[in-house]
Image (cartoon, rainbow, N blue to C red; front, top):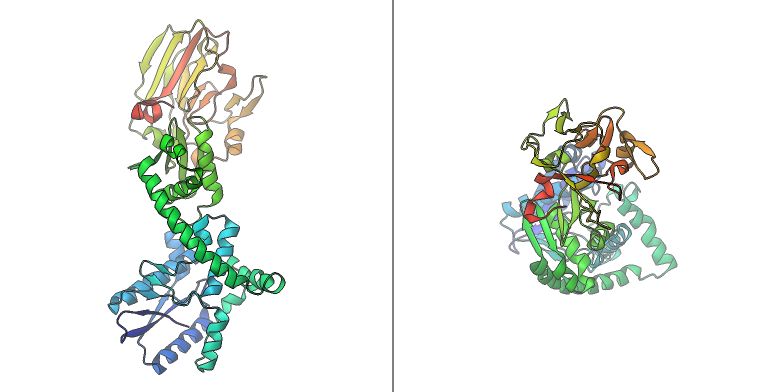
Length: 452
């Protein structure tokens, strides 16, 4: 069946989108046969038709999308083109009740909130779905009675796509072994969830206004008003903020929302990775959701004199051992301070971009550089060491980013993997007399008057 778009009642048109690689359309001869069927049907019913063909595989590669996503974008673009050409205001899609049940199961399996369980919306901007309350079998029966005929997309019978497996196996099993009205009951549930989701959307709007601020670098959630609101709203706000930062909602799952929520009870400086190159970072009384930057970008590559040499950070001398107390700022954006501490505090705040080291046991020059073969660090108080390479692998840091991470080192021993781990050998203890404090000023040192 062709999708249709209508403006005025007397001006109808049919739209057929053909593709060589699209999840909802067959390729090659099958696509040609389907197009011929739609052309003949539109000619018989005196409906103008616009046919669009697109190489979805090439489109997906160009824009770095899955073929399923690319096919959807190509179809939507064709629909808008047809609507504009015929001065229409709405685009009618042929989704039916079975499609909605498939979507609900797919969302549930992948992890979703209430909005996902509301399924496909009957009205969404210019898109309307007049057949959403009708079963596919009812549509097919009507067409048989009208002697209109219809085409079945051959790819729908294959199990290459998750949706097809739900369509071909999961729903038939539920209807035959659990309840024959499974799809109808899911439709009723979706309508209830749509109403509940609308209410929660309005409440989430109020919470957003109370605790979310956006800026050039991302979105900031103020934790005090966030915690004061009912916890039932927390996941909805978090999901909305992640979607706003990403520019899309697809692939934002419950696990991502839960990981961000857990940051509320974690110490400052903790972070979690999110889809689309995003990260969530706890900074004292706020949580930032923003694009993840490499450590070089955090410092402003070149801005503070941090340079690359053959893809790696070049070496910069920060301080020499044995010097008296000092307090200095380097051109590379590193603040160094040596001071005497007669009594080490029982506990001091752990900050991601400020670290203390036992200055008296440092025997070589302290330098800022990139990684080198043979680098290592001590990982516990018992003296066990680990190769830097193995640490970076275990930390799941992509290979292409490992040469970009700034290191504080003495010889081949790494004092601090900036933004990650500190060498246990140089930890401050009750025997420490002089402390070397190293702070990355450009990222977290003075931003908003806070330090990590």
